[in-house]
Amino acid sequence: MQSVPSDFLEINRKKRVYLPFNGLSYRSPNERVCDFSEVVMPLDEERARFEASRCIHCPDPAPCTIACPVHNDIPSAMWLIEQGKFDEAFDIYRKTSSLPSICGRVCPHEQLCQGSCVLSKEDEPVLTGALEAFVADYATCRWFSEGAVVEKMTSTGNRVAVVGAGPAGLGCADLLNHRGHSVTIFDALPQPGGLLMYGIPGFKLPKEVVIAQVERLQKEGVEFAPNQFIGRDRTINELFAEGYQAVFIGVGTWIDSTMGIPGEDLPGVYKGSEFLILANCDRKHLPENLKNDFKIGQNLVVVGGGDTASDCLRTAVRLDTEKVTCIYRRTENEMPGSRKDRDLAREENADYQFLTQPIRFIPRDDGHLGSIECVRNRLGEPDEKGRRRPVPLEGSNFIIQADMAVLAIGYWPDKTIGETTPGLETRKWGEIIVDPLTGQTSRKGVFAGGDAVTGPDLVVTAMAAGRRAAQAIDRFLMEND
Picture 1 (cartoon, rainbow, N blue to C red):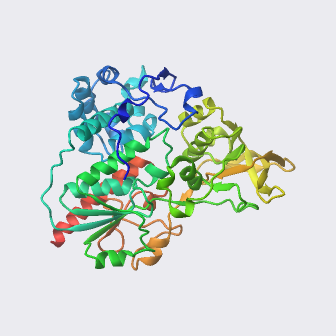
Picture 2 (cartoon, rainbow, N blue to C red; picture 1 turned 90 degrees about the horizontal axis):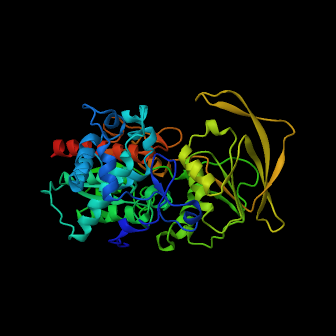
């Protein structure tokens, strides 16, 4: 696997500009669109200590701790950072989280810990996410540079198969490994990380950060088995036959939703996950079925309003495009994705068209996508989720020129595991049914968590589900022993 650069914390540290996004430092738009390097600049030690000193250490349990899906002891971490005890602060995060360097970057902190900071009532909240990323990077660099000393746990002799190397699988494997169980992570893709490696662009989450997390788990004893599609290359039953006493399924949601309109299968029309993988990943990390020629269009249209749509937009502006447009069938008020990401996309010269709905993809003479027929909408009555329904306006049809379109309209789990595992109960669209407290499925010894259970959700909630299941798996194994 690719090695971790020892100086990745220092990359671009001197290139800073302050923008009005929660007091963080961002690279300027003109500079950042020229590459896929991280947009949010990491804190330095002086800024980290000052920022942490702003925490007023609310009584336990603090609002930020309650709002965190894994309930990190944020006030204690803030006190240690203020004192310059960065390694000790990292140890606080590691008690409850397997992915501090990742969650510190990709969590929607303004909706979770940071958004619950009591200082926000009269002042700016403490930058809890950036501080979590800072201490995680600091500790990771020291850990690798000082020889990666690993404390080996006494082995229980039990073997656990984790299916899926994304946040749920990594969280589950991390905790089980520290309980002394032998863990192997099976994944269909060549490089571990799942969504973290293949679905989140490098300007939000540097690949080096994900690789460092994987290498640390490897050095601590977790084994990785890439290019293994469980349910096709081998089944859950076969994993048990090979000697694994328990299995955790954390395969995420990789099946893109479709629109069901004419021309959706034209050359030049991409699914969101396919586009992000092709545009963001090193060719050596691509699965074999995607190692084909990838030529970016000049007029690129992204369909959708979630975080994936923003990721596709911001990826496209970094490529050789002339115009990048997002079309969404409701107004911006109904968009489910992060407002901050949309603001960053606008700074990077992406355009938005609201109340706009595609009804047909139109080919050029050579059969490639050439344009998109759309209609204008108005908002009608609320749907079952409370969002006002888009209602097409009769006679409002118009054409958008586009030689590439990306459909970022949602995801579903792959049904293969459910269809090849006797006794495993799933829902209509393939989500695995579990006990929400333990992750136990209907099949004895099989546990599951993350997006494969809930549908698309946050990285931190997937990781938390993996850790909850690991605790249940640990009890299951010890009881059976």
